[in-house]
Image 1 (tube, helix red, strand yellow):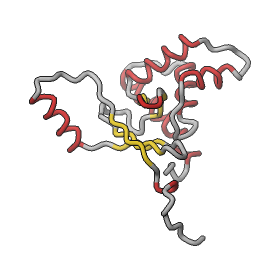
Image 2 (cartoon, helix red, strand yellow; image 1 turned 90 degrees about the horizontal axis):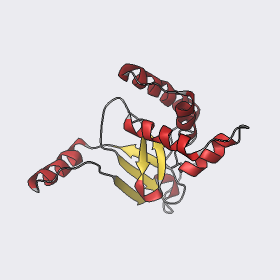
Image 3 (cartoon, one colour; image 1 turned 180 degrees about the horizontal axis):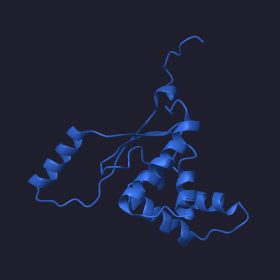
Amino acid sequence: MPCSNHQQCAPTAIAHAEAVCLARGARLTAIRRAVLMEIWADHEGTKAYELISRLSREGNSVKPPTVYRALDFLLAHGLIHRIESLNAFVGCSHPEAPHQAIMLICDRCGTIREQSSDELNALLAGIAQRQQFSTFQQSIELHGLCLDCQPDRIRPAE
């Protein structure tokens, strides 16, 4: 289920990313900002080559290494998440603090919602610790149908 007012959430997310970068002494350059804006264009996963295509439409050709460097920066600063199963990227809802996101991916409409769970993160950390396993990266992705796409959902009369 997408946000109720995407016209507001995307600009708010960009402003939030700018504030996070400023606080960290990092630069949200024009290309990094453009990539982030394209990722926040909707709540679906965006692939790197889609970004290259969209950014190249404005009259100039954007090279793949430029986009990949921007994606690396945005990932490193927690401004986006990589959706491993889709080989795509989605904006982070709260980049101010490091966190483990749980991505809820609707296989019908493509919407991706970010959630987090301190309890689940503690459980996973405990499992890794008991196995003396050092985690560098973890991805939790749940595929299914959002509330709007569930076939048996009764919609309220309007």
